[in-house]
Length: 213
Image 1 (cartoon, one colour):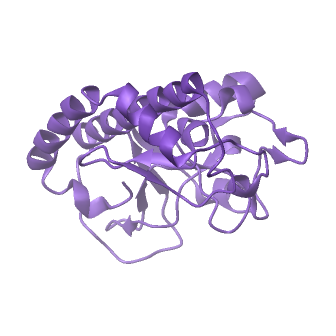
Image 2 (cartoon, helix red, strand yellow; image 1 turned 45 degrees about the horizontal axis):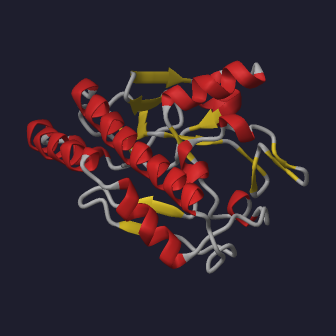
Protein backbone atom coordinates (compact mmCIF):
# COMPACT_ATOMS: atom_id res chain seq x y z
CA UNK A 1 0.00 0.00 0.00
CA UNK A 2 2.50 2.61 -1.11
CA UNK A 3 0.16 5.46 -2.04
CA UNK A 4 0.11 8.55 0.19
CA UNK A 5 -3.13 9.73 -1.42
CA UNK A 6 -4.79 6.50 -0.25
CA UNK A 7 -4.67 7.88 3.29
CA UNK A 8 -6.63 11.05 2.58
CA UNK A 9 -10.04 9.78 3.72
CA UNK A 10 -9.06 7.99 6.92
CA UNK A 11 -12.52 7.18 8.25
CA UNK A 12 -13.79 5.64 5.03
CA UNK A 13 -10.69 3.50 4.55
CA UNK A 14 -10.69 2.35 8.17
CA UNK A 15 -14.30 1.18 7.90
CA UNK A 16 -13.42 -0.81 4.78
CA UNK A 17 -10.30 -2.30 6.36
CA UNK A 18 -12.04 -3.42 9.54
CA UNK A 19 -14.60 -5.22 7.38
CA UNK A 20 -11.83 -6.80 5.32
CA UNK A 21 -10.16 -7.92 8.55
CA UNK A 22 -13.33 -9.73 9.64
CA UNK A 23 -13.62 -11.33 6.20
CA UNK A 24 -10.00 -12.47 6.31
CA UNK A 25 -10.54 -14.20 9.66
CA UNK A 26 -13.35 -16.26 8.08
CA UNK A 27 -11.27 -17.64 5.20
CA UNK A 28 -11.27 -21.43 5.22
CA UNK A 29 -7.72 -22.76 5.45
CA UNK A 30 -8.85 -26.18 4.22
CA UNK A 31 -10.54 -24.72 1.11
CA UNK A 32 -7.45 -22.60 0.44
CA UNK A 33 -5.20 -25.63 0.86
CA UNK A 34 -7.36 -27.55 -1.62
CA UNK A 35 -6.85 -24.78 -4.21
CA UNK A 36 -3.10 -24.91 -3.66
CA UNK A 37 -3.04 -28.71 -4.15
CA UNK A 38 -4.96 -28.36 -7.43
CA UNK A 39 -2.34 -25.91 -8.69
CA UNK A 40 0.52 -27.97 -7.33
CA UNK A 41 3.67 -26.44 -5.88
CA UNK A 42 7.05 -27.28 -4.41
CA UNK A 43 9.87 -24.83 -3.79
CA UNK A 44 12.86 -26.09 -5.81
CA UNK A 45 15.34 -23.65 -4.19
CA UNK A 46 16.17 -22.03 -7.52
CA UNK A 47 16.56 -18.58 -5.94
CA UNK A 48 14.78 -16.79 -8.79
CA UNK A 49 12.41 -15.05 -6.35
CA UNK A 50 15.41 -13.69 -4.40
CA UNK A 51 17.16 -12.12 -7.38
CA UNK A 52 16.45 -9.82 -10.29
CA UNK A 53 15.49 -6.22 -10.80
CA UNK A 54 11.87 -6.88 -9.81
CA UNK A 55 12.83 -8.50 -6.51
CA UNK A 56 11.26 -6.40 -3.75
CA UNK A 57 10.44 -7.83 -0.32
CA UNK A 58 8.03 -5.74 1.74
CA UNK A 59 8.49 -6.25 5.47
CA UNK A 60 6.54 -5.25 8.57
CA UNK A 61 8.24 -3.46 11.50
CA UNK A 62 7.87 -6.60 13.64
CA UNK A 63 9.70 -8.61 10.96
CA UNK A 64 12.51 -6.06 10.82
CA UNK A 65 12.99 -6.34 14.58
CA UNK A 66 13.02 -10.15 14.35
CA UNK A 67 15.74 -10.03 11.70
CA UNK A 68 17.65 -7.48 13.78
CA UNK A 69 17.62 -9.74 16.84
CA UNK A 70 18.83 -12.65 14.71
CA UNK A 71 21.57 -10.85 12.78
CA UNK A 72 22.59 -8.07 15.15
CA UNK A 73 22.11 -5.57 12.34
CA UNK A 74 20.53 -2.15 12.81
CA UNK A 75 17.20 -1.11 11.27
CA UNK A 76 18.78 0.74 8.36
CA UNK A 77 21.24 -2.05 7.66
CA UNK A 78 18.27 -4.33 7.05
CA UNK A 79 15.76 -2.21 5.17
CA UNK A 80 15.35 0.86 3.01
CA UNK A 81 12.34 2.94 1.95
CA UNK A 82 10.77 2.62 -1.50
CA UNK A 83 11.48 5.41 -3.93
CA UNK A 84 7.81 6.18 -4.60
CA UNK A 85 6.34 8.99 -2.47
CA UNK A 86 5.72 12.73 -2.15
CA UNK A 87 7.43 15.80 -0.73
CA UNK A 88 6.07 18.19 1.90
CA UNK A 89 6.50 21.97 2.07
CA UNK A 90 9.72 21.62 4.07
CA UNK A 91 11.27 19.45 1.38
CA UNK A 92 10.92 16.19 3.31
CA UNK A 93 10.19 13.04 1.34
CA UNK A 94 7.26 10.90 2.57
CA UNK A 95 6.73 7.27 1.67
CA UNK A 96 5.17 4.07 3.04
CA UNK A 97 6.44 0.62 3.99
CA UNK A 98 9.92 -0.89 4.13
CA UNK A 99 11.78 -3.19 1.79
CA UNK A 100 14.69 -5.52 2.46
CA UNK A 101 17.91 -4.03 1.16
CA UNK A 102 19.43 -5.44 -1.98
CA UNK A 103 22.99 -6.14 -3.00
CA UNK A 104 23.24 -5.45 -6.72
CA UNK A 105 20.09 -7.19 -8.05
CA UNK A 106 19.68 -9.71 -5.24
CA UNK A 107 18.19 -9.60 -1.79
CA UNK A 108 21.11 -8.87 0.53
CA UNK A 109 20.39 -12.09 2.43
CA UNK A 110 20.50 -14.36 -0.60
CA UNK A 111 23.61 -16.48 -1.14
CA UNK A 112 24.48 -19.47 -3.31
CA UNK A 113 24.02 -21.56 -0.17
CA UNK A 114 20.50 -20.21 0.29
CA UNK A 115 18.83 -17.61 2.50
CA UNK A 116 20.90 -16.30 5.41
CA UNK A 117 17.76 -15.50 7.44
CA UNK A 118 15.64 -18.46 6.37
CA UNK A 119 14.17 -19.13 9.82
CA UNK A 120 13.32 -15.43 10.24
CA UNK A 121 12.34 -14.75 6.63
CA UNK A 122 9.33 -12.43 6.14
CA UNK A 123 5.79 -13.72 5.55
CA UNK A 124 6.03 -12.60 1.93
CA UNK A 125 8.93 -15.02 1.42
CA UNK A 126 7.25 -17.83 3.33
CA UNK A 127 4.16 -17.65 1.10
CA UNK A 128 5.78 -16.91 -2.28
CA UNK A 129 4.60 -17.38 -5.03
CA UNK A 130 1.10 -17.19 -3.54
CA UNK A 131 -0.76 -14.23 -2.10
CA UNK A 132 -4.34 -13.32 -1.20
CA UNK A 133 -6.09 -10.26 -2.59
CA UNK A 134 -6.92 -7.65 0.02
CA UNK A 135 -10.54 -7.11 -1.01
CA UNK A 136 -11.88 -10.66 -1.31
CA UNK A 137 -9.08 -12.91 -0.15
CA UNK A 138 -8.83 -14.61 -3.53
CA UNK A 139 -5.83 -16.85 -4.13
CA UNK A 140 -3.39 -15.36 -6.65
CA UNK A 141 0.17 -16.21 -7.59
CA UNK A 142 3.29 -14.95 -9.32
CA UNK A 143 5.45 -16.83 -11.81
CA UNK A 144 7.46 -19.65 -10.27
CA UNK A 145 9.41 -22.69 -11.42
CA UNK A 146 7.88 -24.78 -8.66
CA UNK A 147 4.34 -24.91 -10.05
CA UNK A 148 2.73 -28.16 -11.10
CA UNK A 149 4.59 -30.27 -8.56
CA UNK A 150 2.80 -32.43 -6.02
CA UNK A 151 2.35 -30.93 -2.57
CA UNK A 152 1.32 -32.97 0.48
CA UNK A 153 -1.87 -32.19 2.40
CA UNK A 154 -0.06 -31.03 5.53
CA UNK A 155 2.27 -28.80 3.51
CA UNK A 156 -0.61 -27.20 1.61
CA UNK A 157 -2.51 -26.56 4.83
CA UNK A 158 0.55 -25.04 6.49
CA UNK A 159 1.06 -22.77 3.48
CA UNK A 160 -2.64 -21.83 3.46
CA UNK A 161 -2.50 -21.01 7.16
CA UNK A 162 0.49 -18.70 6.66
CA UNK A 163 -1.25 -17.03 3.70
CA UNK A 164 -4.21 -16.16 5.91
CA UNK A 165 -1.85 -14.97 8.65
CA UNK A 166 -0.07 -12.75 6.13
CA UNK A 167 -3.33 -11.23 4.87
CA UNK A 168 -4.50 -10.52 8.42
CA UNK A 169 -1.16 -8.91 9.29
CA UNK A 170 -1.25 -6.79 6.13
CA UNK A 171 -4.69 -5.49 7.04
CA UNK A 172 -3.71 -4.82 10.66
CA UNK A 173 -0.60 -2.97 9.48
CA UNK A 174 -2.71 -0.83 7.15
CA UNK A 175 -5.19 -0.02 9.93
CA UNK A 176 -2.43 1.01 12.35
CA UNK A 177 -0.69 3.04 9.64
CA UNK A 178 -3.82 4.99 8.78
CA UNK A 179 -4.72 5.59 12.44
CA UNK A 180 -1.29 7.16 13.04
CA UNK A 181 -1.07 9.12 9.78
CA UNK A 182 -1.64 12.88 10.24
CA UNK A 183 -1.21 14.02 6.65
CA UNK A 184 0.92 16.86 5.31
CA UNK A 185 0.80 19.67 2.75
CA UNK A 186 2.46 18.77 -0.54
CA UNK A 187 5.56 20.57 -1.77
CA UNK A 188 8.13 20.25 -4.51
CA UNK A 189 11.02 17.74 -4.72
CA UNK A 190 14.11 18.70 -2.74
CA UNK A 191 17.52 17.23 -1.99
CA UNK A 192 17.73 18.93 1.40
CA UNK A 193 14.93 17.34 3.43
CA UNK A 194 14.59 14.18 5.46
CA UNK A 195 13.17 10.83 4.41
CA UNK A 196 10.02 10.07 6.43
CA UNK A 197 8.59 6.56 6.28
CA UNK A 198 5.07 6.05 7.60
CA UNK A 199 4.24 2.60 8.95
CA UNK A 200 2.20 0.94 11.68
CA UNK A 201 4.53 2.35 14.35
CA UNK A 202 4.19 5.94 13.16
CA UNK A 203 6.91 8.07 11.53
CA UNK A 204 10.52 7.02 11.02
CA UNK A 205 12.69 10.02 10.14
CA UNK A 206 16.15 9.60 8.70
CA UNK A 207 18.78 11.38 6.69
CA UNK A 208 19.02 10.37 3.03
CA UNK A 209 22.69 9.47 3.55
CA UNK A 210 21.51 6.30 5.29
CA UNK A 211 19.81 5.13 2.10
CA UNK A 212 22.46 5.95 -0.49
CA UNK A 213 24.54 3.04 -1.77
